[in-house]
Image 1: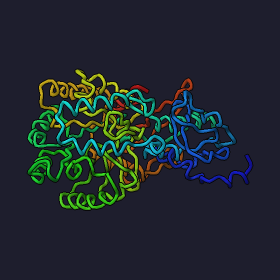
Image 2: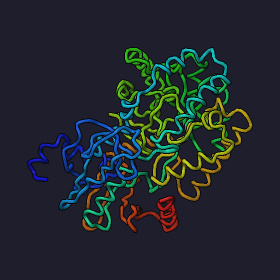
Image 3: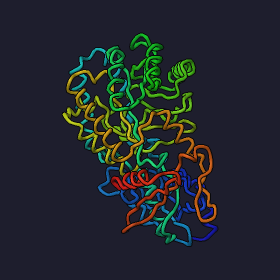
Image 4: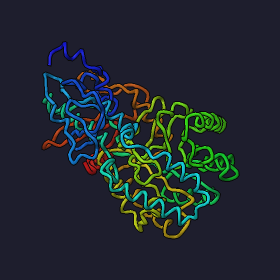
Length: 474
């Protein structure tokens, strides 16, 4: 491929490398990916190794219904220090995160609107039966992959492997994902939907406090229950975090843009009045193209895989990501309602399985547990089991338990940190650098592995803990 043909590519070099560099925060001169050939004129599905992608490819793209997707890895080549790709990884990652692949499959919006129009007159057993029938069919879909889809991480990790192979380097430095070298992050959130949930907030805070965990409560400001202002104050008084949960939780927030603009104005007024930095829409409804109308620092409305949510789709990542200036903290585990009432699970085995998958990619483990549903002895017992399990993992593997607001602060700081070489050492510069750690990616027996260069002040015991953390499911 000559220089003249490269200049004809529609995507710039910066755009091709952007997702990789933002994910790993490695020196920009190390992320040298270029497009090898002219890409297809139309978007569709293709694979890149184990990852399912959506976008344009040098190979043909196809519908998801094909038995086997064409693999863009076949177009990969090496030229000097550069890796030539048959697709734009930034475009592919953003198409997954922003759920743009749904344009081919349809969103079923009119069916959701019909359901929420008649929902108030449906008895709970009827609603549950309808939900189980619809959602159980989605579990059979190949994409996004159930119970956790890590396609974005698989794309970017594959790029790092290619870079190591192409440059024949022993290691490539980058800024580790979480502060103090923690292997994964974990947050628990509680959406308070009705009067019963509002009455049970203290009970849920007691359970969380029993293992030394602080969590976030998302509160509905209108219609659903009285005393919104007092609930915000009570939650904060106990050291927990308060965020906004929709406007009135009627399931119609994103029905149309005109309606959303009016409601977003009122939502933003509540956020400003009560100093609420985070938002989650009712029933995980969302339209990421409209997020710029929300005056929040972070949103928590996008599931990783949405097979058991009213709105299908999923962002296919277990890491936070920016939608404009808004940071998305995706839901990466199944909600308690779906676990208890749709799947009718009597154990936390599915939660444990999801935790292990997320941890293998060093991602964000995020839960939604409603005070509205942790009321019967069985559900309360299962939640206690979850708390004990993650408490054990914290002691053994050093999980970073954090509030959404803390994760928001860290991820924004990390996005501004710079990794520079000073003499023979790599150093991190910028606000928050004292909490950041230099990490190194390397290939061992053809498999991508990480190690963390611990801060000089870290003692031997902490270094040993970090070594255990980094090897967890790696």
